[in-house]
Image (tube, rainbow, N blue to C red; front, side, top):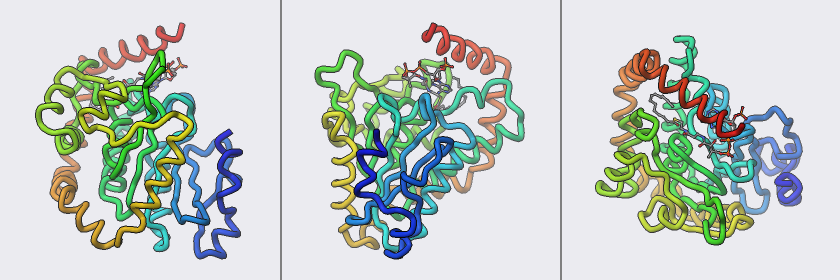
Amino acid sequence: MLVATLSKRLLRVGQAKRCGLSLRSFSDAKDKDLVLTSIDGDTGVATITMNQAPVNSLSLEMCQAITTAIKEVESQPEIQSLVLASSLPGVFCAGLDITELHKPDEKRLTDFWHSFQQIYFDLYGSRLATIAAIAGHAPAAGCMLALSCDYRIMVSGAGSKKPSTIGLNETKLGIVAPSWLGYQYIDTIGQRQAELGLSLGLLHQPEQALAIGLVDELVPREEVLSRAQAEAVKWGKIPAKARLASKMLARKARLDHLAATRKEDNDFFRSFVTNETAQKIIDGYLQSLSKKKS
Ligand SMILES: CCCCC/C=C\CCC/C=C/CC(=O)SCCNC(=O)CCNC(=O)[C@H](O)C(C)(C)COP(=O)(O)OP(=O)(O)OC[C@H]1O[C@@H](n2cnc3c(N)ncnc32)[C@H](O)[C@@H]1OP(=O)(O)O
């Protein structure tokens, strides 16, 4: 459906190359592709679409695929803006893939957290203007992806029986968000709302998320992607160097801090997750997710 809706406006690889662009289009995508990248040939806006059913959870491979896609787009000097979207109806990204944390292999766990940190560097620090098209749930690390963008457009909850939610719900699971993610939250919604949200593990419905500044706009579901792409065109027209310098005013110190403490952060994560108590929590949480289904 998404492919059909968009393909008219997207470049095939050959066309992209003739325009000096060399990204894959949706029409070249294989079902196994974890993310799909396309460029609108008219506007030059790139769209990276997360495509890992059922919930776009961030496995090691998914994190690496997102990073590769961002780097691929960034390597095209003509492209100034990027939309991050999901191909799944109702879910933007369910956060970290919890199965990565369950009885983990230490080496893979280290690589996994490294790849998650890398998304923070690549997306939060991107030279591109980045717009999140949040047409579904975005808990925890899913919220982090949205927070790492410059502008967030979410599906409206009006009239929906089960509105999508966004927020950092880690404490509800008995865990704590890493400090760099916590600071992203504070920097975006302010100290008080972040304290409330983090302490209570709140997942906000769209109207509440808009009220506290966690997202910037709400639109009906069918308009989320097109509205994000239109916003990306607007951001792409701002002089790039000035736009990037302004972004870095707010973000550079945070990025530098994680760069300087990256290994400690990974060591802490690894020792936290492999601890027996955390493993019990993770085990229980995985069971509760599958029980919910049955
Ligand atoms: C939990 C302990 C972690 C310990 C970590 C320790 C240290 C520090 C790290 C701190 C940072 C954490 C950041 C995170 O991102 S933690 C992950 C938080 N994410 C969530 O709590 C979301 C969980 N998922 C949901 O709430 C829902 O799935 C949903 C996103 C609202 C979508 O709902 P729905 O459409 O109804 O889909 P289902 O619930 O039926 O799920 C379908 C399918 O997907 C599996 N699944 C869902 N989420 C995850 C996930 N995050 N990781 C892996 N798998 C997930 C779910 O189990 C179903 O699978 P089956 O079809 O096989 O049953």
